[in-house]
Length: 419
Image 1 (cartoon, rainbow, N blue to C red):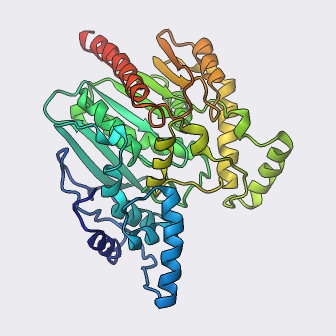
Image 2 (image 1 turned 90 degrees about the vertical axis):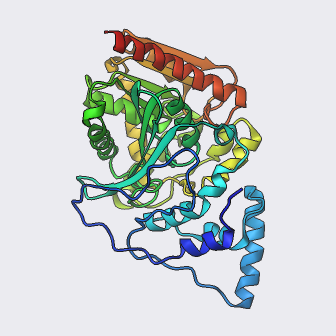
Image 3 (image 1 turned 90 degrees about the horizontal axis):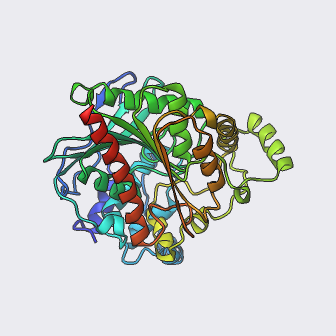
């Protein structure tokens, strides 16, 4: 699946990290402008902070590790993955960004080769760029863009990813599809998620996260070449909640929002009973970073297609552990706030939700559609579809959802161009 040998990939992952970026630095380019068929051997040059390096074990340790990897990799569906690489990934401590970056760097070629429609689709004339920037809170944030290279940009799409996720896995295929339709796509990993700095899976404040998004995307929108283009928020799952909170803070700054299975309310099946909620809220005040919140298998609940569900294991830097206490409390409070403020949503929007979603409640998406004060609003409900309608359904359904999104964008971009 990859042109680079597993051994060389593994060796590159263990290189000593360079000095950490200075606080207060502006945009720091560590990625690379590239064509669709870029050289995947270009490595991320901004691994920061010292981190533990891999140490080979003695003969007995290697035998035990090999047995462990064989047991772990097989259920994950990592067929053909080099033993040492699999061991490094399964044993890595992903709490901090440097190791997450190393793991992603080692696995990204493998990810691009998996048998999923989002990765198999071929698009030409797309320029991609990855970079890191230290934001106003002193956090090093990973950003990525996908731009059409041979056509005029019709508008900007700013993506807000879901809980535990990153903008560097399934969204790669979604972004390329949107860029091929003529849109500039921009994404960032939230602090503590994906390749951005911060304790993995930790949200100390949802409002801080929203402010980070606003800061990042405002810099994009302020660039002279983009100032006259329509701009759209794209929020998926928890990212839908982020997008709505951005809208509340910037009610007149966006031309529309794409909300895919938005987290306006978590489904009852994934929320602890009320009494347990109160206990967890109290514990979060003294043990905010602890992983004590019970959680069901979200991949099983979110992905209808079994093969695509198994491919989630290739998203090696996703946060898959129990939610941290403060994170769970912040998400719960955010959904409660959104439920109270549905009438305040005033921007043009399209809501897309699977009717069989048991992660985020589709009935609240219906309520959002009915109660929002927007004069321009549309909702698509997909019969029998689960939560991950852009990743975990049949190929036909996935591309139907993408076509619905692009059709909605085209109508509004044309309207803006003619005004």
